[in-house]
Amino acid sequence: MSTIQPRIYLASQSPRRRELLKQIGVNFDILLLRNEPRRRIDVDEMPEENEAPVDYVQRICRAKAAFAWDVLALRKLPPHPVLAADTTVTLDNKIMGKPGDREDAIAMLQRLSGRQHQVLSAVAIVFGDHIEARLSTTAVTFAALDEERIHRYLITNEGHDKAGAYGIQGHAGAFVERIEGSYSGVMGLPLFETVELLRTFGHPVP
Image (cartoon, rainbow, N blue to C red; front, side, top):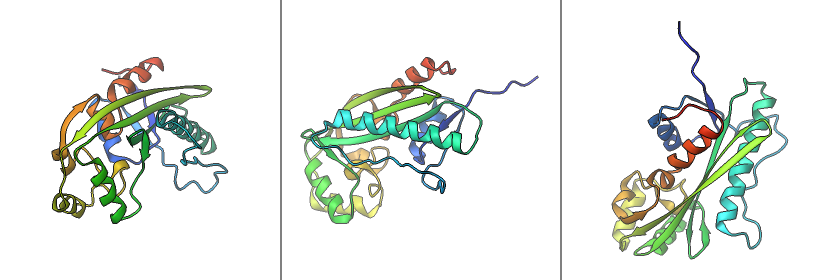
């Protein structure tokens, strides 16, 4: 007699977050938020005035989780815990978002070249009125990048939709001289903190 495996919803379209959840054997369904015609609210991802990056990434992550739970109820889907995440790259305690265009991406990579930056990755889970979040902070040191190397990387188109204009799991992994913290957090979902949260909600994990 087969048993129904516990599931969660993943409120993210990121293929990297899907891969990481599969890596630790978590059963999930994707909860898409962008194309909800009946929604009355959205998540404003603009930083507040003088908001510290660590406060920003956790606020946005919690807001995404809460919004996803509202969408779940609106669609009358079976209630399971909803997981949301947000990742922010910071340099000199300032947020580096996703590049607006190629020139913006070049400028970002030039700023990261030969320096250490921080990747803040927050994860939150909500079920009913219960919401909890965790934060992972990782220091990443890049090698010096010359103009040719930056241009070759941008041809791959890997970094156009990623904070800081790069993805560590792709070609940009070769830029990294040193990493202190969570590799999966830099990818977008810190697995240690994710497992901690899942256990808090009684979900079976490794």
